Amino acid sequence: MAMVDEPLYPIAVLIDELKNEDIQRRLNSIRGLSTIARALGEERTRKELIPFLSENNDDEDEVLLAMAEELGVFILYVGGVDHAHVLLPPLETLCTVEETCVRDKAVESLCRIGAQMKESDVVEWFVPVVKRLAAGEWFTVRVSSCGLFHIAYPSAPEQLKSELRTIYGQLCQDDMPMVRRAAASNLGKFAATVEPTFLKTEIMSIFNDLTNDDQDSVRLLAVEGCAALGKLLEPQDCVAHILPVIVSFAQDKSWRVRYMVANQLYELCEAVGPEPTRNDLVPAYVRLLRDNEAEVRIAAAGKVTKFCRILSPELAIQHILPCVKELSTDSSQHVRSALASVIMGMAPVLGKDATIEQLLPIFLSLLKDEFPDVRLNIISKLDQVNQVIGIDLLSQSLLPAIVELAEDRHWRVRLAIIEYIPLLASQLGVGFFDDKLGALCMQWLEDKVYSIRDAAANNLKRLAEEFGPDWAMQHIVPQVLEKVSNPHYLYRMTIIQAISLLAPVMGAEITSQKLLPVVITSSKDRVPNIKFNIAKVLQALIPILDSSEVEKTVKPCLVELSEDPDVDVRFYASQALQSCDQIMMSC
Image (cartoon, rainbow, N blue to C red; front, side):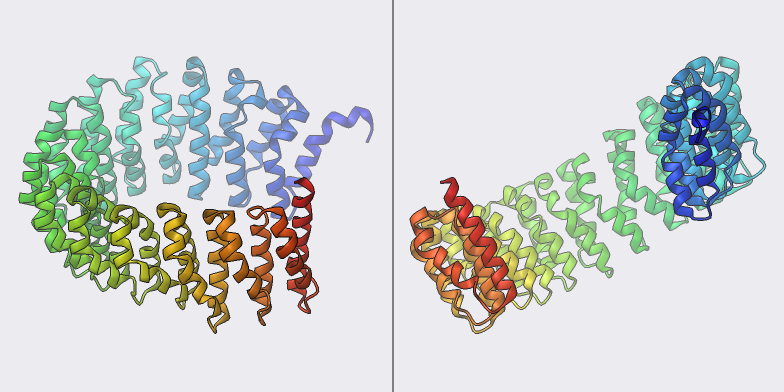
């Protein structure tokens, strides 16, 4: 190509690629827009590239989504914030397409650009875009406009601000529920930019309309608005305007709205303050905990600990605890699971006596639940109860249930118990652990499920770290080494892995005297899988052992394995020998 044509080359390539039949080529072209813009320079990007993109937006959604994303970070390539307005037309067009994710990304990019524009440019260029979209014929266009008001409003002069508030109010009363939903969803962001005077009058009027909407999909989004507006209003205004709405929503005829209240209740309580929460929201919350829809009870049960923290222990015991007892035997396993995931957090709130009398029986019933997820959720949070009632009482009441779960038929429950063992060990202390849980830890090494055996081997390492090498030498190492002759090769492999994990904790002397001889003996195993794992273990042991031991014992064993008939054994043995030679040379 001639030198004079050189400046035209990038745009020509872009045009060719954007018209290519292969969608991947078109996508790559869009994702390379920044490179093309740099090649063209700022002026030609503004005058040629951006207009070209504005005209060529009839493409697959995937390409348009990529374009909307790229344009959001394009200010740098058009000459900075002074020229940011040139990016608005293509994004405005993308706000009108049918696909939701493209519109959402275009709105996000417009917000990003608008937030960086000068105030005068926002008034001159950005506000007209918002007004055009808000007056769009298709509902999808009006939906897009709702997400832009909070950017346009702060820079506008008084008269224009009044006009924008009026337009937003009209969108909240739009014929199409989808537009009202978008307006309800963005009300909090818009309200945060509105002056306090208008917040109490016009915005609250808009909000009241949304809370009385006949579509439950609009009302449930207004629930989010309760929390957002509550943070903006003065406490007394919040109690006067927001609290009655929350109480009403908690009894809404649509379960989706009640679900949203249950899900947002803690944020709503923060908005109205502690006193109204105790007086008005406790009865509302109790109703949600006893709701006839399981989904509502699930959401409410998941917030029980957070809600109790706002209340005094007396109120929690009087009003919330009876509901918790009911939920622990709920007909829906998902409700019980949601409760089990948070109920342990109630112990610090209620204190020792109430936990022992009221909560412990509930914990025990959930620990014996037929649904594994419920049991899992209780197990994983036991430490929160230990802090309140002490380890003696915990071990007396809950440990029998834990031992029972260690042999649970669901392997995930057994796995959760194993992962909890080191924490339990540190809380119980070495003496108690030896009596009750030591045998279990060995039993898991011969579980039928690989994940359990793997976790059991790691568990032994963590226990050795917790109680020290002397304890491990007495209680772990002899029992592990006994199992190395198990007739099943998979179990033998677990023992080899356990030895590999224990060696760094045990130190050079014990490794050399006790562990290494067993590994060397196992290298004569008839199963190739064992032999190449032995090669890996020997490679891991080389840094722990002293060089004379490596030269005398490890190396000859690896040389023998490197001549094995099996290709994998030879490969791993050769790798270990190379590692051995490198370490010996560096010594």
